[in-house]
Image (cartoon, rainbow, N blue to C red; front, side, top):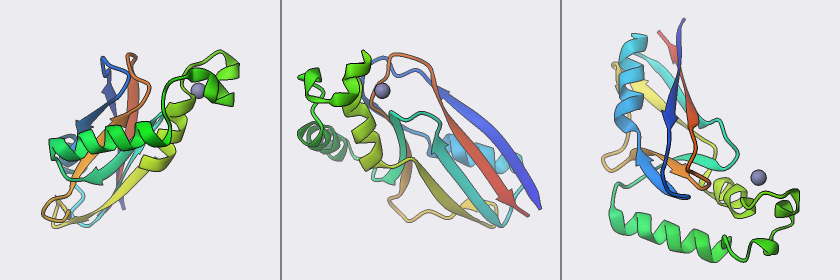
Amino acid sequence: MKSHREELWFHVKSRRGFVRITEDVRRAVAKSGVREGLVLVNAMHITASVFVNDDEPGLHEDYERWLEELAPHAPTTRWHHNRTGEDNGDAHLKRQIMGREVVVAITAGELDLGPWEQIFYGEFDGRRRKRVLVKVIGE
Ligand code: ZN
Protein backbone atom coordinates (compact mmCIF):
# COMPACT_ATOMS: atom_id res chain seq x y z
CA MET A 1 0.00 0.00 0.00
CA LYS A 2 1.18 3.52 -0.78
CA SER A 3 0.65 6.45 1.53
CA HIS A 4 1.35 10.15 1.28
CA ARG A 5 0.95 12.90 3.86
CA GLU A 6 1.07 16.63 3.41
CA GLU A 7 -0.16 19.80 5.05
CA LEU A 8 -1.86 22.74 3.38
CA TRP A 9 -1.34 26.08 5.12
CA PHE A 10 -3.79 28.99 5.12
CA HIS A 11 -3.79 32.53 6.39
CA VAL A 12 -7.29 33.91 5.91
CA LYS A 13 -7.06 37.67 6.51
CA SER A 14 -10.59 38.02 7.86
CA ARG A 15 -12.25 36.25 10.78
CA ARG A 16 -14.28 34.00 8.46
CA GLY A 17 -13.87 32.78 4.89
CA PHE A 18 -14.09 29.85 2.52
CA VAL A 19 -11.19 28.70 0.34
CA ARG A 20 -11.58 26.16 -2.47
CA ILE A 21 -8.90 23.49 -2.07
CA THR A 22 -9.99 20.88 -4.65
CA GLU A 23 -6.91 21.60 -6.81
CA ASP A 24 -4.52 21.32 -3.84
CA VAL A 25 -6.01 17.94 -2.91
CA ARG A 26 -5.83 16.82 -6.55
CA ARG A 27 -2.12 17.75 -6.62
CA ALA A 28 -1.49 15.76 -3.43
CA VAL A 29 -3.20 12.71 -4.96
CA ALA A 30 -1.09 13.05 -8.13
CA LYS A 31 2.08 13.31 -6.02
CA SER A 32 1.12 10.17 -4.07
CA GLY A 33 0.98 8.00 -7.19
CA VAL A 34 -2.15 6.32 -5.78
CA ARG A 35 -4.52 5.11 -8.53
CA GLU A 36 -7.14 3.38 -6.35
CA GLY A 37 -7.68 4.50 -2.78
CA LEU A 38 -8.94 7.22 -0.46
CA VAL A 39 -7.91 10.71 0.49
CA LEU A 40 -8.71 12.11 3.92
CA VAL A 41 -8.70 15.90 4.22
CA ASN A 42 -9.15 17.35 7.71
CA ALA A 43 -8.76 20.67 9.44
CA MET A 44 -6.12 20.48 12.18
CA HIS A 45 -7.79 23.25 14.17
CA ILE A 46 -10.99 23.22 16.23
CA THR A 47 -12.24 26.49 14.74
CA ALA A 48 -11.94 25.51 11.04
CA SER A 49 -13.68 23.00 8.77
CA VAL A 50 -13.24 21.01 5.62
CA PHE A 51 -16.40 20.29 3.67
CA VAL A 52 -17.68 19.45 0.18
CA ASN A 53 -20.27 21.56 -1.57
CA ASP A 54 -20.97 23.84 -4.54
CA ASP A 55 -18.58 26.63 -5.53
CA GLU A 56 -21.38 29.18 -5.78
CA PRO A 57 -21.02 32.63 -4.14
CA GLY A 58 -24.70 32.89 -3.16
CA LEU A 59 -24.45 29.61 -1.27
CA HIS A 60 -21.35 30.85 0.55
CA GLU A 61 -23.22 34.02 1.58
CA ASP A 62 -26.06 31.79 2.78
CA TYR A 63 -23.63 29.77 4.89
CA GLU A 64 -22.26 32.96 6.42
CA ARG A 65 -25.74 34.25 7.31
CA TRP A 66 -27.05 30.87 8.48
CA LEU A 67 -24.03 30.20 10.68
CA GLU A 68 -24.28 33.70 12.19
CA GLU A 69 -27.97 33.06 12.94
CA LEU A 70 -27.15 29.75 14.63
CA ALA A 71 -24.02 30.87 16.48
CA PRO A 72 -23.57 34.66 16.34
CA HIS A 73 -20.08 35.98 17.04
CA ALA A 74 -21.42 38.88 19.13
CA PRO A 75 -22.16 39.50 21.88
CA THR A 76 -19.15 37.41 22.82
CA THR A 77 -20.41 37.20 26.44
CA ARG A 78 -23.14 34.89 25.11
CA TRP A 79 -20.73 31.91 24.98
CA HIS A 80 -19.37 30.28 28.14
CA HIS A 81 -16.23 29.24 26.23
CA ASN A 82 -15.25 32.90 26.02
CA ARG A 83 -14.83 32.96 29.81
CA THR A 84 -11.37 31.52 28.97
CA GLY A 85 -10.52 34.98 27.64
CA GLU A 86 -10.94 33.94 24.02
CA ASP A 87 -13.60 35.39 21.73
CA ASN A 88 -14.05 32.38 19.47
CA GLY A 89 -16.85 30.44 21.15
CA ASP A 90 -18.96 30.88 18.02
CA ALA A 91 -16.14 29.58 15.81
CA HIS A 92 -16.03 26.23 17.65
CA LEU A 93 -19.78 25.80 17.10
CA LYS A 94 -19.60 26.81 13.43
CA ARG A 95 -16.80 24.31 12.93
CA GLN A 96 -18.89 21.55 14.46
CA ILE A 97 -21.76 22.16 12.06
CA MET A 98 -19.60 22.44 8.95
CA GLY A 99 -17.54 19.37 9.87
CA ARG A 100 -13.95 18.43 10.56
CA GLU A 101 -13.08 16.39 7.48
CA VAL A 102 -14.02 14.79 4.20
CA VAL A 103 -12.98 11.51 2.62
CA VAL A 104 -12.95 11.34 -1.18
CA ALA A 105 -12.54 8.19 -3.27
CA ILE A 106 -9.67 8.01 -5.75
CA THR A 107 -10.50 6.14 -8.95
CA ALA A 108 -8.04 5.75 -11.82
CA GLY A 109 -5.80 8.33 -10.14
CA GLU A 110 -8.51 11.03 -10.02
CA LEU A 111 -10.72 12.47 -7.28
CA ASP A 112 -14.04 10.67 -7.72
CA LEU A 113 -16.26 13.70 -7.00
CA GLY A 114 -19.81 14.37 -8.17
CA PRO A 115 -20.28 16.93 -10.96
CA TRP A 116 -20.76 19.95 -8.65
CA GLU A 117 -18.70 18.80 -5.71
CA GLN A 118 -15.76 20.97 -4.64
CA ILE A 119 -13.66 20.71 -1.50
CA PHE A 120 -13.46 23.78 0.76
CA TYR A 121 -11.55 24.97 3.77
CA GLY A 122 -13.89 26.87 6.09
CA GLU A 123 -12.27 29.41 8.39
CA PHE A 124 -14.20 30.68 11.44
CA ASP A 125 -11.42 32.28 13.48
CA GLY A 126 -8.86 33.50 10.98
CA ARG A 127 -6.15 36.16 10.79
CA ARG A 128 -3.50 33.58 11.68
CA ARG A 129 -1.75 30.63 10.04
CA LYS A 130 -3.67 27.36 10.17
CA ARG A 131 -3.38 24.05 8.39
CA VAL A 132 -5.17 21.11 6.86
CA LEU A 133 -3.90 17.53 6.78
CA VAL A 134 -4.12 15.58 3.53
CA LYS A 135 -3.55 11.83 3.85
CA VAL A 136 -3.67 9.65 0.74
CA ILE A 137 -3.74 5.85 1.01
CA GLY A 138 -4.18 3.15 -1.58
CA GLU A 139 -2.27 1.54 -4.40
ZN1 ZN B 1 -11.56 28.68 21.64
